[in-house]
Length: 421
Image (cartoon, rainbow, N blue to C red):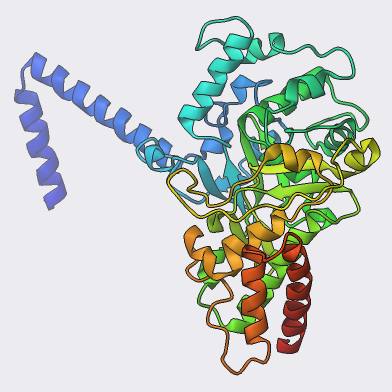
């Protein structure tokens, strides 16, 4: 008789000697253990993206859309992190997840922190004249009027930075490029609710669609949404990882950043994008060395074509942004007037923001010690000029100094980048 048989007989003998109550208690204990470990196995190994409760599809049309729901529910997409587990959700305060779509890395976002989402839900309830905690899937239908042609302008003005100063032309562009619509020509009432809800939570998906990666904009590609989860391309490696890269590599990245600042105000669309949140954590470098801005929640969009058309008093007087030191009252170190950005045809804001936050010694205030262009080689012919131009870009000696210095700086960085290649 082997050890297994002996053990089985001993357990059977002990079980037979138990009282009826003892046998019932043991049976209940075994059942509870099976339930507990079964549930544990489920939450660890099951794909939460397949479940409507995780992506909050049940809150639609107070959601971001449904264009990716089939892919979510088929199991094509999987999460690469453990932060979706209930035990770890408190650590994932930003509600951002790393995912896998076949061989491609993707980022999935809820677009807001949990407390922020609850607060916006309550705002929707109040707009529908309902109590906090109402059914937002129904409440959203009673918060806005879908009739007329100006509904979006009326409801979305100042809902987000993107719609701080909207025009009909901007809204037409938003509608035209919106990927959550089924009809290629116009949006249905439900799709308008998707759009409004998204902007209330976070403008990022709308901006990524309105100024898409495939048209050359330096943002990750928008891939779709399901419920209250959006999916975008993985941006790459954080810019901070290149702070101590060889000088040649830092020159190329600096040149791209300054090019982005220029592209945002000088482009064929005649929309200016003002980059107001220049946190280095929001900038990535992809596998090909291209710089991408991965958090665009605070970009202000201004219709320069409309400003030129209307020519309101003072429209052509440039808005020169003054240098402001960091302080407890100004922790982001950059102050600006939203009204000036919305009403002026010309401003040096983007150049100031990039030089101050990424390139110069002043970038230390933003977490990039001494900036990307630190430690310029002593034997570099253009060394003194680069240092001088960077300082002029941040703290100009004349009102137009920043706009003049950025042209020279772009030319030098362009020449160096090509020479290094």
